Length: 151
Image: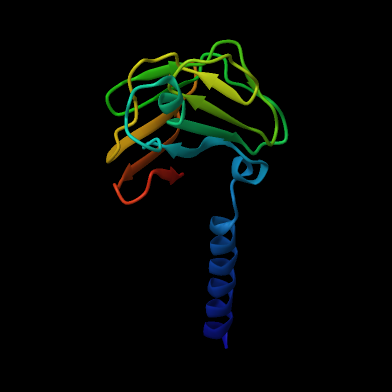
């Protein structure tokens, strides 16, 4: 009898621990700022026109319940091409698209102002970093079958 009580206690404790381990962390429960999509192979030929450059982009999504300042945050590829946000706040539930070419910055679109492509058409890695350099998220792809990667 004592053995079955001990076994039941161990089983109950294991279930509680397992349940605790499987619960999302508080940060996951309230959302995050993360890489959402990389469109790495813009449509058509790679002509380096501004329209073609701007069809290549990375998207960052804020799934938290508040606006998050991205001032000083950066997006970097594997070759160390880096885009750093100036004064900018990403509203709750919103996505910002960081385009490779030139344009006028808005709340929904930011422009790197480059004259050459950033994202390789076959494989690359995007890293989102805070202003402190701490890595927030990464997203890699290794395919020529599709033109984009959902992170």
